[in-house]
Amino acid sequence: MLTQSVAGRTYDYDYNVGSRNMGIAISVAFGAGDIVYVLSRQHEQLADVPWNKTAVHAKVGKYEVPDTPGAEELLFEFGKYGDGDGELVWPTGIATDSDENVYVSDEWLNRISVYNPDGELLSTWGRAGAGSGEFNGAAGIAFGPDETLYVVDSLNHRVQKLAKDGAYIGQFGSLGTGESQFNSPWGITTDADGFVYVADHKNHRVQKLDSDGSYVMSFGSFGTGNGQLNRPSDVAIDPESDVYVCDWANSRVQIFDATGKFITTLIGDAVEMAKWHKQQVDSNADVLKARRRVRTLEPEWRFALPAGVDYDPAKKRIVVSDSQRWRIQMYRKDPDYIEPQYNL
Picture 1 (tube, rainbow, N blue to C red):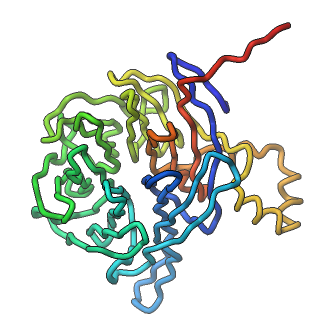
Picture 2 (picture 1 turned 135 degrees about the horizontal axis):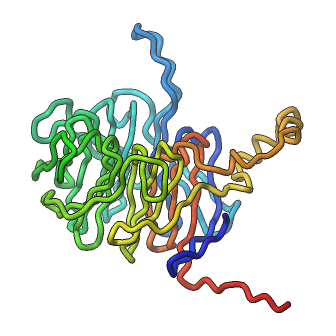
Picture 3 (picture 1 turned 90 degrees about the vertical axis):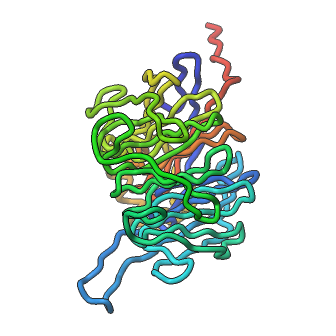
């Protein structure tokens, strides 16, 4: 459904951006104006010998994504596959600070790489381990309103709090199913009041905690019904405190209000192909013929294992990293939507 109005809110499909060259879109972050940073990676095929690495890429793309569909542009890319300075192997989380410096977590390298808005490496910190400032699967990252950096330390089943230079501040969480416990957490976000929301991946829920990790509430349980989750991968929040949960294994995004009450579901509505996808299809006559022979193209409109979700308050945009479709899909939360008038 391109437009849905529910519980006093209207969600209107905007458009999608992507191509095979984008790769597997994992997460996004926002810069000034129309800037969107897309973190992507590619499937790995690694043999047991060091001279046969065939992974394609791991990178950040800096895109200009204006209001007009088809006007999007890729400005440049930075970060490439490898384990050297500024390189990435299995990047997972991305966030920007108040200076638009870009922070990228790497699950494989267990470190955070920091770049300036031009893609130049500023610093790298973190290493494998279970100590303070060490990681075992550095995953989602997010800044709090005071610019404390929260890093999901997935396989240590905790969240670490760090300064912008990587200095250790504190941590919370442990393995379990109880309050303030996690099982392989993935995505994270914060709200304007400093509360922290964690996508508790293998516990099939989202937990809301205060900035020190004290439990506030949780919502979600395993399943496919409304309000149920199957390995949530990310979480976002808008200024009205509506919560967006990337329900990864159910291939959807679910929306909840501030109390955890289910509102509605987004499933992907990319009826029109992205500009660059269309160029690739139009350049191959056999692909065009094949597409005309299928019963329906609807499956390609929908999300396929969406990995990330974020909310851009400046544009009132919900941006979903549609990982297996090599694109991002965007919706708008439209407070000024006027229902159509039927004069029959």
